[in-house]
Every structure is written in structure tokens, then in C-alpha cells.
Length: 133
Image (cartoon, rainbow, N blue to C red):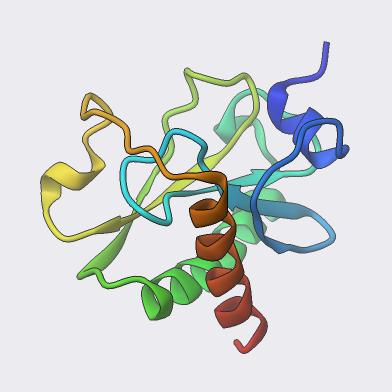
């Protein structure tokens, strides 16, 4: 059975996409820790991040770097934090979280809620910044 991320990649489940390449997709987390919390996934479903090939790992990092630049130019924050956990969905992925303090990337924190309109506006602003890079 395909992961929820594969279903998003295949267009079966909607997502607020912020960037896409031939091999990777970036979209807003539906249960964000911070405004702009973005997930980066490889389009090929691989459960464990470190089972990705060297080429895939370097590719996802370079793609994440560009998305992080777009996030940082769009959202007020000190840094963009990155986390690879891999327990919640059986599909390798990277979390990019806008940070103003260390506590902002604590996955035990309560999640934020934004309306669909707010999520689309956030995604559109990140997409616009990404396209200019």
C-alpha cells in the first residue's frame, strides 16, 4: 500500500505544494510546528532515509537548501531548522521548520492550525520566492 506521501505525489491526496523537481516534492505540513513548516520527500518511495542512495541523499539536501532559502526569505525567522525523524510515515522525508528558538522544533509541541486559505497563501508566497531563486 502506498504511503500518504506517495499518494500526495501521485495527486490522489491534495497538498499545498511549495516546490517540485523531477525527483523531489516540497509541501506544507498539515499539522505544522510553525508557519511554513514544510516537508521534502523523494518521489520514489523509500521507507528509511538512510536507505536512500548517496545520489538521492545529496539531491534531497540540495533541494532542501533551495526550499529553505525560499522559506527564510518569505517568513520572519532566525533560521530554518531541519529534522529527519522517519517514524511517523514510512516514506523518507525532511522537515524544514522556521525557527526563532530551539523549542520551535520540538515535535512534542502543540501543532498550529491554519485555514485552507491561509495555507494556500503561505504556499503561494514560498513558491514565488522559490521560483525566483
